[in-house]
Length: 239
Image (tube, rainbow, N blue to C red):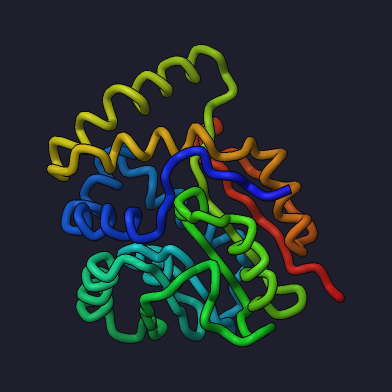
């Protein structure tokens, strides 16, 4: 079964939206998550069990936060379709600490990843899979480019399971966050799109099934921060 989007995820529209908010994107990520976004990325990177010889591919890389945080890999590649986000990411890379693993950024389509079959050790995508028009195709592409037994980590928003927390979170996510996001980014629709896209994303158990169908094994869905975010971990199934 394919993941069918219920909101407008036309690639040109989404790329334009991220181009428009790129300058305030990092600031708003830290502000609206109360700084927890850094911790979530660190947990995703730790789950990859990096040994130091790997090539990491980060999809929907945005301003390259994941590749920049994965300091122990041999090299990292980030792909995104928003040129403005990549430009900011490149400035962060250029200002980085010497000795960091090299990071290369490419503008591209994550439903047709420009990498050879079985050429990548690690794949990540942080808060981007729900923005893809054909998520199931991207999952298959991830499996294609990963080496046998290669590791995958996906971060995506969820909804808390505790009823009281769930109610407070949904009020913040649907009412407060869009207003703050629109005020700071000066983009009326971008931060209304966020809760709408999260609301149409599959439940963790369903998304786990999609990952297995795409060719992944040992699939786990770990709730972070009481289920506000989920970390999906998997390995490419051996042939």
